[in-house]
Image 1: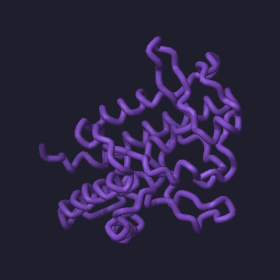
Image 2 (image 1 turned 30 degrees about the horizontal axis):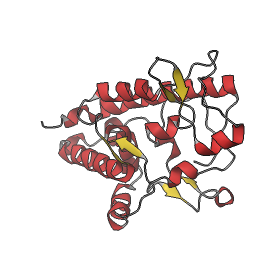
Image 3 (image 1 turned 45 degrees about the vertical axis):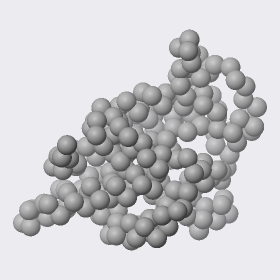
Length: 220
């Protein structure tokens, strides 16, 4: 099934809206529970299991083309094709904390939710998917979450992403593969724009996700 390239800018705006909703849900949960990532912790950034859909990285791809970084990042992904951790992680960012995300505002959905979201068990009770580091830090048990704090659910926001585009938003891939595919899709879209219609201020979505209520202090 061909990808309707003309839809990409509209999709970006809608993805950013889902991200804003996810950020707000996490913010409410953090405020209600007091849970925080340990200062400077980047353990999740080193995980070889981080996955995302291509659609989740489309906003990042537009940003990279806007800032003339797309070709460089594609070359890095190709050169470091065996790298297991996310290509966006840079140890030279906030080195006192062990590094950070080079494009934090455009991180994928799991990067926004991990440590502050969960899933329903067989009885329909929401349960937090514990981050190992936070579990040890806060002595978190296996019980259900505090009923006074609405727990963000991975499924809720995953379905919201998939609903935007069942092809680009359904299949989760290793994070670097998803980034590469997003860059290829956006590059093709920009190449197919009419020569006299290359006002990229129109083609490219807003510089930063809209509606994000806070920026965490941690580096990544």
